Length: 272
Picture (cartoon, helix red, strand yellow):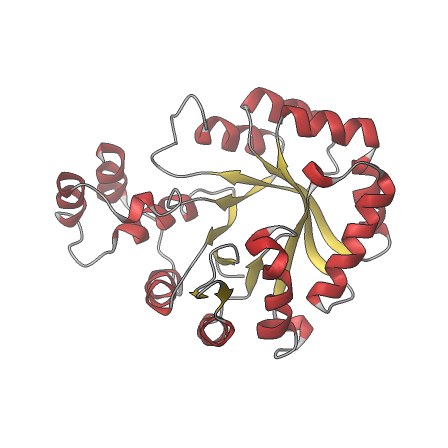
């Protein structure tokens, strides 16, 4: 699998609705270039992301030609029954009999207490045992210390979805490096979200752009951010929430035949 995933939380819009025809064209370009990983959730685009993904992907391509990941909205769940009810609704929205990865969404300290109190990891494992999801994991937003505890308590988690980008690599708040290293110690690969920090790293100050351009004048700012994350050994895939065809073509151009950052490139990114 190529290391770029399509994050389905920032689809192009036409007024107040998702521009379905534009998304179809983006999906076709993505698939044509050999990329297959699509990441959505129950709440993206007010609940419409999963429905649109059915229309633009599931109904148009063979099911074994792509990977779908979606997420359980733990912040909306109050019982094991609601966990399963929402999952069943997601299968209907997506038009599939299984998902490839299923995550507990946006887990932090409060969310983890709920997960433990309701026994949601057991429910997640049961979905896997029934063949309704191929892989299980956690989408994470908290400290490396809590992540270490979660992965110690639940080695059954196979992957962790992390906020990870070069700006937040040493941040005491996001702690990208420390969280990544916790995953590596536990033998878990990371799925990277926010590699461009919500688009911030695609719009750099002039001085930062100049520093990168001295190494590669043709590389887009977003390419540096995505390649930084993708160059890490224990990263499986890097998600990009692409909003138009220009972003799609840029991202796929440098990830189609991905080359990790070299020494001079790593030094430039560290300085920026």
